[in-house]
Image 1: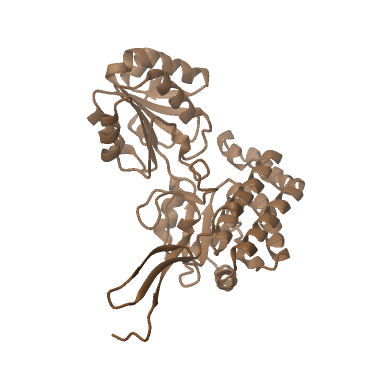
Image 2: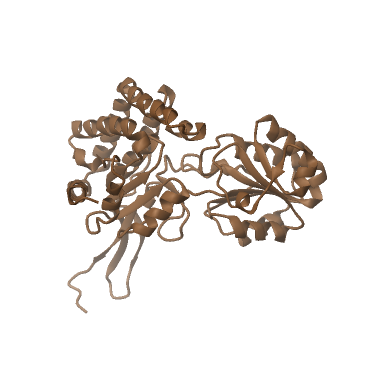
Length: 419
């Protein structure tokens, strides 16, 4: 990494820190005005954004990138409109800054309040999806933070166009444009420079595949929240409603394959396998899903390919799913414990007792009972647009919305108290 590149990234971080200090005292009305200006600007500049996105998409196709990756990258007018609406939705949410998490009057008369405050400067390192640029900028701004956006080179043109539009919109309302900055992705070492900006960057959030997340965690000198990797299971229990189970499996796998809350593995209790396997295999085949299954699944249909150990550990992000018949609830839990990434796990069962056992036995950021794994999403859970889904256990876990983009300060009020 060149000294000039590191200096440039750190200069951006210093500008972001100055902007973040200014944002700390900005009232909700001013932040919401900036968010509405950002949303309006996205819509007004749709053609400019789509033209830039076309450059990225065509470059990806020329490079032979898979369609599921291109689907993440591609924008259209509806997706830009959805980005704008997501920004307006964030404006409508309560401001977390200033919320009293807890408060009390101590025995000595001191008044204690724990209050939410902005974290400061957030670094985002992410792959593919240009919508993350707008989501991250909006969530960070609403929570009083500045954000440094380091997208992938594959989305460089899209992200540059979106960031430019958002900066101009923020500046037009009187807030500092440097609250939203893009880090040049043309040199991979710009990520390293961001990760080494200890004292300038307060938190880094990687959003992408397992390789990206592991690299960030390995190289970072600043705190990191791990997000996203989703080796997600659906377990169809012996007491499952099989019509419900079929709908959930098909939705969880095929609604959108390139996202971290899509199902990647199917477990079926042997007590319902004879009835359920022909139905689920046919339904998945109809939707062009390749099933990587065990011997029982393979005996059901010749289209099922033999599953390997790697298949059970794989986050496909494509029209593929691993599948296995288990002898018992305990075997299902053991399989999940072995291969889960801790993102989302689902059970389909009519037994309340089994559902409760599953919740207690499985360690994941989200657990779905008789519901599709696709609901692990900040918007679906009423949090507004999310900045990512944390699979770690410190500070934030699961979908991260506005409250997770704050820290707290203890405010202690006395009347001349001394110790």
